[in-house]
Length: 310
Image 1 (cartoon, rainbow, N blue to C red):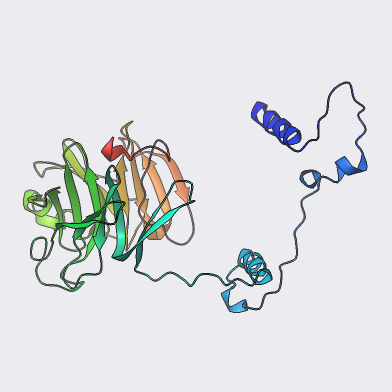
Image 2 (tube, one colour):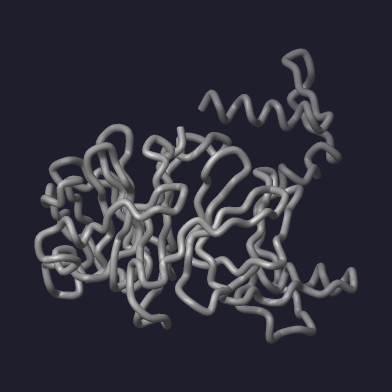
């Protein structure tokens, strides 16, 4: 309640409505008519010309204001969109016209970030880009994590960077999870360390994280059957440390992250489910949504760097 009282007091002072104990308890009509003191009402949904663009009532309100000012909404974004850098306050943006990034993007250092390039005719590779738009191919995945081209032969779907090791980890959908130096040299493939190869985690993976002595990944097919996805943790020697209990399924995307307190976030993207589990697999936090989630990254603060590069 203390926070609520302070907040209301600040609102009243900021708008010039000041009340003190020495004054009367009677408010004037002008004071009573102030907008923040009015009862909440459900406004009528406005009628707009571009009715085909209205998917929900909120769209109608936005479109009504745009039409009032003779403005047109932006066209829907393509599935593969231009890479864009946005400041934390959203006031400035930088678009890189010669890039086609999709699926995943990761902070590296300074103003450099890495992304999966979907504009190539061969396999999706790891590229770095800085604020000036200088692009450098870091890792060419063709014939390294898979053979041939085309989605069934190679499909980069997740990338992560670890500052401590100065390594990238790269997921090739149905083929491989590879560890690559920032210089682009392949360090090792998880399928070659794990007994049974990628079948040990169900053969398909997306989100993952390289830790000090292990690597965790989201296995879309899992190994428990019943279309259940699972998170897995393998030691750097390839030995299975843990197959997490399945909380749902995700045919696409899916992510996993180890928190500083030892808990693990598992994101079942197409099931719109996020679970935080402890070392015993007990769910300590659960978030359910609608539609589909993509990748997820926990940070201590919006203004701080990701945990991987601290």
